[in-house]
Image (cartoon, rainbow over the protein chains, first blue to last red):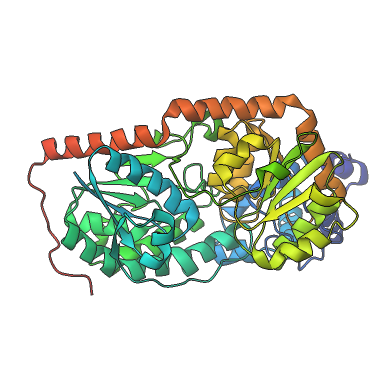
Length: 98
Length: 400
């Protein structure tokens, strides 16, 4: 698996937001067994993400991008937590990791 | 002593409370229930004293994750508490209990106990609160507190006096053991599952084939399309040499059997209800949704599990079982027949799962269950009556 810091070192520019969206979509598809994951797919409603999956996803995001998922979720209110989409998560990861 | 039990009108909450109530009654105490007679009577039998509150049906809750937790609160816990408050208030006045036993999510019972200055024991029947997987989300915690504060205010209690009604300051009885639940960061008595006498529906035990291994499939009482689809995938992936007993609502029976037309005779037995405690000793593995009661009863019998959690506290229950080594988790919505087959075979063929299930079962037995819980309720009553011989009844006005 490639490493973001190494990529940045190699290419000299941050990964595009589109790239983050594709990677996060692939990560979520792998985690939940869903086929394609659209950017507007809600993690809970469309992908069925539960507390177990959040724990799994947190490990993957930390290892891959150094992103603190629970720290991010802790800033969201209940409606935002329930409505969180794959695209929003990817954009957050892009903002933090890029 | 006089004990008033307040619980939720659901089997997974009534059965443990009934086990405790039965032990208390056997020890000479007067036990009464506040709740819906039409819901409670079939589960409690003709001799139970039920102080009727009327009954109201609430919709099944959907969704997954936090959405399911939110709908559990807004569609069930809160409206049920509002509905129950006047009835529990009347029951306390009529029965004059010394102590209440209140389900953790039957919040009305705790609030009325508080209004009357009565001691109460919280009975934890859910895996959600003890090791809350969402506790790191402060805005969700705050939202939940607001739900409780609304009920608190409705009962005429001051916000400045607020104390979380999910946790009695007197006694919390949790159907858990450290070997399964891990460390719990609040004062609770881990008494293990509360299991008492209960009606055993008939079951054709003679149809269990001694040459095959036995899988019990029990996904709770929600009769939705997702469960029907899950059952179809389980049966499509049923490994050879395994006989399945499927607990399913009556509308599902013909279609379930038809999903395996190529399999001879008794490969799949379908029943609406089963005598769970009598049946589990015959089972090699349980495939369930991670409800606390069935999961605990499987482990008590040393039976390992494959869990497909759907919502509410079920993912947390599954996490605990997996962490303890007593089972594996599969995806309720998306596991394929091949994945389900592999999960069942994997658990059946590795004796480590059964060994872990037996370890937890032994810890459950050592925790004492309903007997220990009954002793703790007695001790609570003795302690409180020694410490405060006159109970201060500050709230004498009825709840509107």
